[in-house]
Image (cartoon, rainbow over the protein chains, first blue to last red):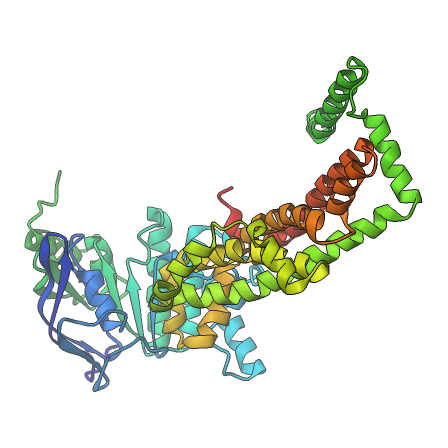
Length: 253
Length: 254
């Protein structure tokens, strides 16, 4: 699945925020390489800077020091080859499902555009809703729409910031399956922010465990279980419990 | 079914109640100059047959349309530009805040000085009265756009004019429509005052002229009623915009 070529190179990234009470170290000395086609989860408690890191990698926020390079080029601003998927709040409510999916496809020929719309609307299971507006859709459908809009422009890299956080636990599980299916079909590099340990072990090739104040990388865990993953297998539980311990949590309450 | 019928008829019931109270008050005060609703209706009818009713309504609507449309066409783009640039906004904001509380009516002497007695003066006053509320609404509408939409737009490679056309404007439209409604109400207030002073036609002129030409209070109140009815109809017209599928999302909370 994963190529050996480095896609995203994060070198010595620091981020300080100035607040009323002084400077806050949101990120301290982050070094991370992500390979082409790899699915990496950034995992940590809220306030550990994982979303900040994703915004820096996405070009929405400049680092205080350090660099992020993608394919050898330093990132300074957002780029349409790399799409950021917000929680479902990112779909444009003034456009239909079709209009949203077509949003990044203006430069294509009409035929090509129609083909892509149809392909991705179907891929995320929204066929029949092409002319519906987001306010007529459920949260899970809006989330799938945003993923379809991102995939439709055929980006190399996807950034997902707790994309399923607002969904109920059943829809969330279904969406994880859909994401894996899309990822395997389209071979994108995916950087996925979550605070859900199970989610990270179910999805990722590698889980980057972060700690808060200052936000640092604590440990990187290789998830060496092939897909589809059995949540009750010994290896799964071993890896999950390892991360629980790493974060300093008991896995029973 | 019955309940829906009752709630549909209730506003008419309230109006009937008001008319009845008005009628009773007039009847029980012989010698009052205030006419009964029947006399007002007869007055409106008389205006209609003299050909004045339609003429005055058209005259007033003409002025409102020009003043209001010019204000909207300038204030919305200006508000979007100011709303997107904090530097421009900081430069212009003090000036806007000083000009805004000055009632458009305070400009009447200057309007007459510049444009004389006539349509242009009235249009200018309506323009002034509509411009500032619309400008401030447009600036705020841009400020209130969820930054996620702007980030998502930039992520798809949009900047400058394209970002405005494809993200900022459609995201601001629901609030702009609310601004259109408020502003139209303001322009309706000002047209009456402007017509009392700066022109010799229109519903505002009708009101002041009927009073001066022999205490025709039936026509004074007739003019007031027509202004109210026209205001209601225009508001209804603008509210139709809220039903567009591409703006419905902005009103889901209401």
